[in-house]
Image 1: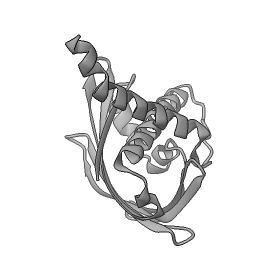
Image 2: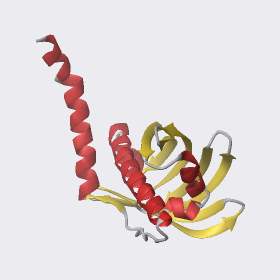
Image 3: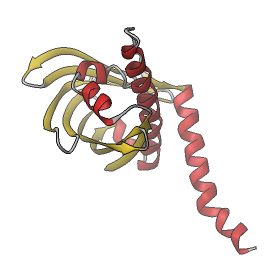
Length: 191
């Protein structure tokens, strides 16, 4: 399934691109992600934990940068992993492209996600909504870390599982808004 998100960071493109050079730093911005080992050659071992309601999924695997285009400000990462309790697998190709947006930077993210097992049982809408919530949190963490680095500070982010009640509620709200726009707005416009 192809999922597209974008967000803006109130920092210039060059500064955000420089931040993207430090993959462990970037990974620490993603809720629930933790790099556990640098395997060399821009390949890393790590874990991602996501909680969707009462279900907690923890994937262990690898992430490898397969493309880094300085001129286009584009990075492509291939990640693959298996759920710790053998309940599924995930395979994902993520590309992020940076472009100027006023005085800041627009980050366009495309995720080609393949799931098998327990995680695949969730509908496309729910997975897209959870991904959107995680991207918003990632964008906030990224902006906070870049700003802290400018001040010479270090921001520590915990590798706690992404999700829980808060992410479930935010994703449910997104689904409700989508249903409202699809079913109720056309009737109001016709009145």
